[in-house]
Amino acid sequence: MPCTLTLNLWVPLLPSKIGTDNDLISTSQTPGPRPQTADLRNSSTVPEFILVGFEQSTPSTRALLFTLFLGLYSLAMAMNGLIIFTTWTDPRLNSPMYFFLGHLSFLDICFITTTIPQMLIHLVTKNHTVSFASCMTQMYLVFLVGVAECILLAFMAYDRYVAICHPLNYAQIMSPQVCVRLVCSSWIFGMTNGIFLEYISFRNPFCKDNHIENFFCEAPIVIALSCGDPKLSMKLIFLDAIVVLLSPMVLIVTSYARILVSILSRSSSSGKGKTFSTCASHLTVVIFLYTSAMFSYMNPRSTHGPDKDKPFSLLYTIIIPMCNPIIYSFRNKEMKGAIGRALGRGNLASAAPVQKETRWRSFFQ
Image 1 (cartoon, rainbow, N blue to C red):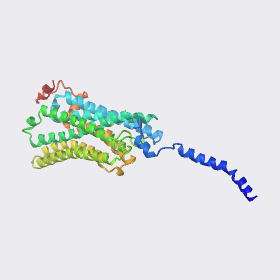
Image 2 (cartoon, rainbow, N blue to C red; image 1 turned 90 degrees about the vertical axis):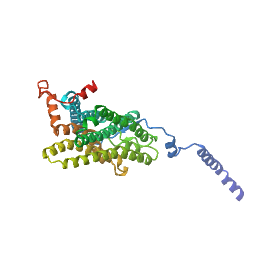
Image 3 (cartoon, rainbow, N blue to C red; image 1 turned 180 degrees about the vertical axis):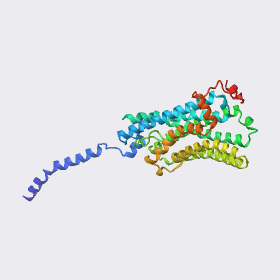
Image 4 (tube, rainbow, N blue to C red; image 1 turned 90 degrees about the horizontal axis):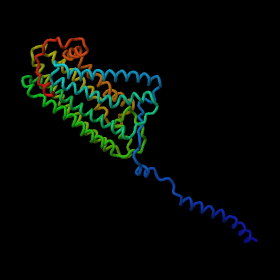
């Protein structure tokens, strides 16, 4: 009896035991989800990015920002366009300084057109996505125009140094051929440096969060979204910023230091005031541009954040391009007079003949 009872108790348990083993075997043979690291290694680039921008703001705040930025954008386009038209058509502005100023206004128009129209569209629509190719294109244009403007500002400082410290040799040193070469070199350096920075920014695949906490594709934020280690890319960005920002800054500081020494050595107070007025506008633009650019590209990533990045991004994408023509116009008597004539407040045809060097016009005609 004990043996029979034991057998009867054991036999009913066999199917459940066998079934459990089969379940275990089938479970072990069924392929489960791969580890996340494997997905990250084998995944492809994300097809699009989402520009967060001012998405978290209330509708009334976005409407106010749209009105404000649209007004600033329109003002910047109108003022810079007027500067380009005035410097090219007015024979009184027939000098290298205004030649550079016209190209600076053209760069400002390119810069704000690269970023601000897209931001205005996103302020009134719910779709904030941009394709991967669009993000790459926008970032390259920002690099190209931004670097070219930094180099051009250094050349403008050198032009002021030659005009003030070497006035007798100014026409020979800053000839039309030299000025054209300087402007072309700033564009060429911007193009080549933009290719380098573009490669650094997109060298790693993107398989993390695709939300960009800004209103345009800014390199440090995009690099932080890549799958690989962003430290190497950020170091290369930092080293490139040293060349692009600090090197022109050294030339600018050296030029203005020599200008200051030359001004202080003069006895005429009227000459000092005129020289300070001419250089103060350029120095103001340089301080604003280089300060905002250094914060965005030379600060450690840990010090960045949406609340800190957006104000500085707005500073060098729309505020500075708008301030450039205003500063040059209201701090320069020749420019104010030329703008007045361009707007019809003066009669250029009935004005007194201008005894100026005409070789600039003949060089471009």
